[in-house]
Image 1 (cartoon, rainbow, N blue to C red):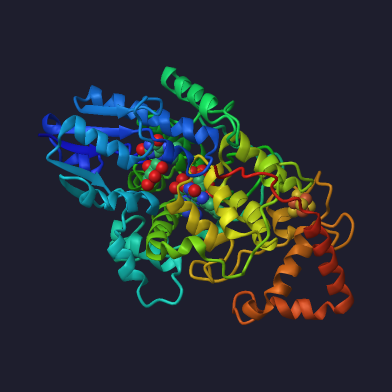
Image 2: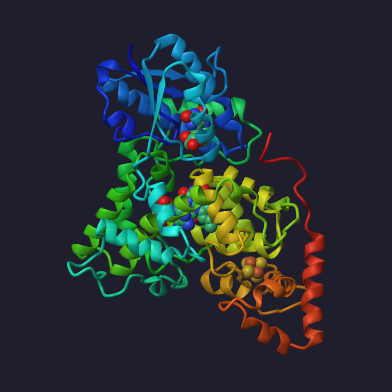
Length: 517
Ligand code: FAD
Ligand code: DLZ
Ligand code: SF4
């Protein structure tokens, strides 16, 4: 009797804990395309095509290496539609003596897996996902008793643990832990990054795309520009191109935004890392090597490593530490429905329109677009956190709720009451104007403060601060801004508030359920 090893759609590596320790001859690998996973939100079309194509390529790679793979396609007539249903059917087919499965990255799926031991008549072993550096227990130990879970301190622990950019004496390379202050260059005129490699769909990807066109045609997004890596080999080529051509400028322009330049110097590797095609620690070692060999400056390399062993590990720990409550947090009592333009891109706010266009065309927007444009708007306009979560989970190729949720609930909306961020990331149009070229060519002007033609972010910013004064005035990082507000005087304040209210009243809520079935 074999061991059954279910491999989930974001566990596509031969280095997976459950595969690493198995002998091929008494193992059946089970991979399942299931309706439940394809529809728990209405994922962007590119995401479904990406996941199915990458799963099918990985199954082929395993078979070629000698593994026995039982692959259930979405269209198989007896497909039950769920992981649990498919494992039950596979047990009938293979009569395994045990199931070995790596824990799920998401709460929803882990709950289902934890029921398998009671439900099935064979032993079930759930293994930790050691593709992450920090275990759940390690994060809990770090978080216990802290008022603020400041990412920076967690990150330093991860630097010490991995030895990345560390000197022999336990101090950070270059003398500082963090070079974020050197990672905020506004875009210079004519800034143009080398394009990332795109991978033309092969037969397997084309078949996945056809399936998506047939079954998920009403989902958001376009398939036209699909070019994601779907195999480890392609993902490695994408990483090579990033290290050779974009890492050097990644640091300085990390926060920059340029109209129509969707990738800039970002790695565009998140979907590959999250699927398991790339190993995050390996990428960090390669970045470190680029620094050691003088191919990239410290602020770029440290910035890249911080995003991965800092932010990525931190949000994963944060998610598991606060789930399931995290999902329903709404500390600022935000109730407004998501605007229709998040789905259509039809808005005169040029920054929003460009970020939504990139989201629709590429199933991607880079971090500062997600945070300081799309996220900032959702915060200032008090959009209901559940609807914001659904949107972010539905529209990006790299979206999984373990990473999307802390970023939405904690980072952009402050809906966790300040566990993740020490202050809300609220900003007026001045920030967007400084860090992008969006405002030139916008119908609105950030120089105009209120009334007709004024950039809506300004009035919305003051309206937000004013309505949350009770909570935010005592915050040491944002509280001082109230002195500026008070100095404005009542007439000016009224102008801002009325301008914001007029804008908020004009927002058209989403006309249909775009994100959920
Ligand atoms: P780069 O800028 O090249 O960064 C390198 C890597 O660092 C990324 O590939 C990613 O693995 C990691 N990283 C960077 N920032 C973060 C972060 N804040 N949290 C976790 N990992 C990070 N990332 C996802 O992978 N999936 C999501 O669903 C997701 N949702 C987000 C929602 C919001 C509201 C915000 C503000 C951020 C979200 N991010 C998410 C984080 C980040 O925006 C993306 O990881 C990044 O844009 C991916 O592009 P890249 O690979 O070019 O990243
Ligand atoms: C995102 C996704 C989609 C769209 N479809 C599948 C699927 O059919 N089968 C599968 O194994 N995984 C899929 N995934 C990724 C899963 O949602 C992800 O692996 C788990 O939910 C992680 O907890
Ligand atoms: Fe966005 Fe305001 Fe600039 Fe227009 S003026 S692009 S709305 S920040």
